[in-house]
Image (tube, rainbow, N blue to C red):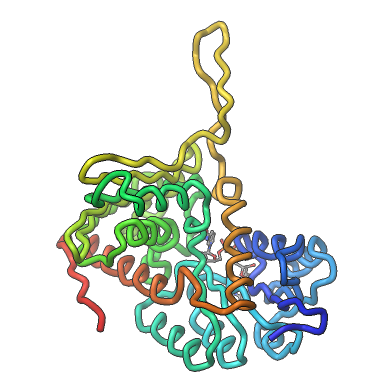
Length: 345
Ligand SMILES: NC(=O)c1ccc[n+]([C@@H]2O[C@H](COP(=O)([O-])OP(=O)(O)OC[C@H]3O[C@@H](n4cnc5c(N)ncnc54)[C@H](O)[C@@H]3O)[C@@H](O)[C@H]2O)c1
């Protein structure tokens, strides 16, 4: 479907931190697309967004955007608990979907989203933007070319400066940092190993949020998870919130005859060495800066896929497998036991 001017009309649902990244990208110009609408039930958030975006229509309810014939595709960037409802409705209205990670709260919700998009014949792409980040793409090409031999271990970590919001303290409601922070690492592990998780073992603890300890003894702000893949390779993830030093996302892949490193704490290659003989270099402050090019590439890939056809990558199955891994990790933390993931038909 295309609008009269030949471009794909896009609505962004959710005008928060991540929503505004996509909205600004589409407003600034993604080839073949234009931003048509911005949805947010909070009037102040919606109006502030529209002021920056020039020309987009504002809707309080996503159903109004789905009824707008100028909208061909939606980017779903609401809190995760709303993803299933909005994606299923969007598919029912015949709109293509780019859904932010985590895909949903449970595997069943993910399966319902995939089924709805398949039934409607619309695209469902998942917001794992690291798959579009230049360093990660180059690293994957090197691994695929055999530069380090067979993959033995994939290790990925994400430690963020954001202090957890109080609603995240309830793991049943938020799925915890494994979902909000480490979904990206889970996807990176699957992408580099080219395989699914067979078993996980995770430990978590609350080291930085004393105010949450009494009411939410299960809350963790630091997690370490080991992984066994189906074909036998190994994985390791660690994640943290409120780290107070930088945004730290790095990858290491150990092969049968080599190792590959990607990502850096450095925000630039500039290093200053003064008369005190200390090296000083700026660190990455936020995922917004580190991955700004990746979000643009992700949005471009989505529009290309909608306009030219072909399967979206990463797609619904990638989102579902990440949610399964999150829930298995949380079960492991709660029980203190390794958790097996059954092979899906
Ligand atoms: N890919 C990434 O790196 C990345 C980064 C940050 C967040 N995210 C994901 O994006 C999603 C949003 O996170 P955020 O940090 O932007 O949240 P946020 O709290 O900053 O913003 C969410 C916005 O959605 C709005 N909203 C709530 N319910 C809505 C509804 N039913 N319809 C439309 N809008 C609604 C809220 O009013 C708010 O403005 C989450 O799933 C999060 O995990 C992904």
